[in-house]
Image (cartoon, rainbow, N blue to C red; front, side, top):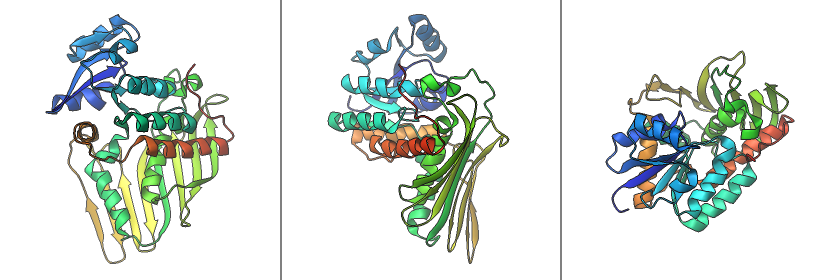
Length: 330
């Protein structure tokens, strides 16, 4: 591996074409060369549909493949940690879907292994790599808003299919895990510090599964925060983030999908401006960042260590809501 990254996909997940396969087709340095699934038949059907040359009947076989440099891990939440660790042991770089692991303790174990390996391990918060999020970060760091007062993020969308794995506690499911991990990441980006969870309230699908969650936060510098995540509630669709400071406010509509309709507005005391960004997919920028890190050692924001901090907030929200922490799948 000197001038391109050969990627193997763990599992025939629905997100894989959007997250990796499609961006790789337009990349000059990334190629999806293999796929594994729970059965060779399922892997073959996925490979045939998407034009992938190599098929493995197990994840272990793919990790042992010398033609694979890196793996994309889109398995259920409760399996992320186990197979990221296995990939590191096999000497593979990892692009792991969010949330990084089932809980912060597992994330710390994976982060330690990543550090010891010297390999690239990236949590797939794809929105962080789009020019929209880069611009948001730039504005926050510039201090133009003045001292911050409040930051908030909402990631709410309807998922009425209750048999979906995102409602399965045994696979580390829940609204806070699936949608809320984004909202937590966003308020951490906007807030500029690691927050303390002050309160949280969940709407339940089952005894341990949240279908929606609201939480209030406080940052060390004194500004407050809030997150709202939902897979099924009266808030059918809401994708936004906002930062309010003494000198103005920054608002973003649809921060997760800038390849579609999106908008960022900055309102200061003396002016108001609106910015739009290109239609190139967030996932394409993410794949660029991943391959740059693998091939050239370029730094990136969604590291394993950052994932530990994100999972720490998620754990605290579950505790504040009176719900058990998610656990790795048995």
